[in-house]
Image (spheres, rainbow, N blue to C red):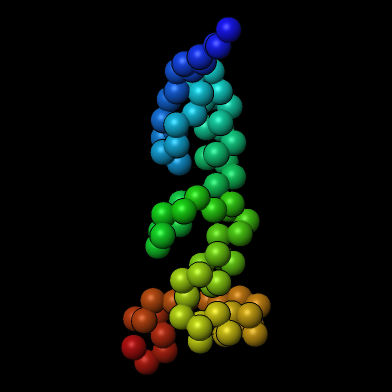
Length: 84
């Protein structure tokens, strides 16, 4: 006897994945708290690894070297630099 499970799903408003409806509230709470969508590739990345993902995947190699050397980088608007 074959049982076909036709579980109702809902789309998560944060990650756009189909999630079983009975789990959607718990999933959304976890997803929105712990994941963010990469602005470049659209992948869902753990928040604590977002900067690392950007540097390893999307940043120009020179920027990745600078950040790894300095440990962090301060990005200022051009008009806030001295003499601008």
